[in-house]
Length: 103
Image (cartoon, rainbow, N blue to C red; front, side, top):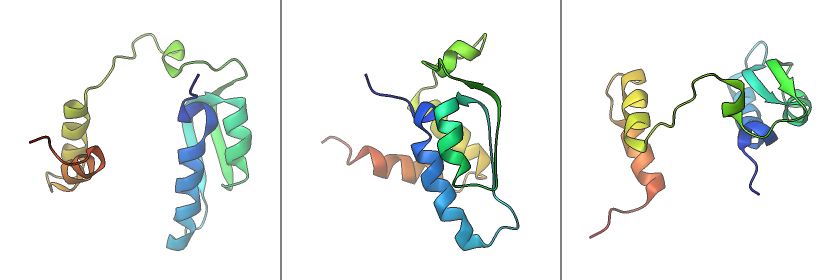
């Protein structure tokens, strides 16, 4: 069964490796919930790794929330667009990762 990134921390670790190029005073990784495995793995890539809940029995992030609805690609793109001031960058990035539009 594929494991989520919240469980493994792989994407977070990749992001943390890119940040030092910006010369931060401190690198702190925070998430509301994660697996103990991911928290340990990420700790080596940050000055601090903080999680409100770190569970050894982490099987799905939705298990830790009373309401955790799915978000469609279009909803996600709209949220990113709003966060980036409508620049079009987020939609272009999502489209480029999805591949060419069918003909």
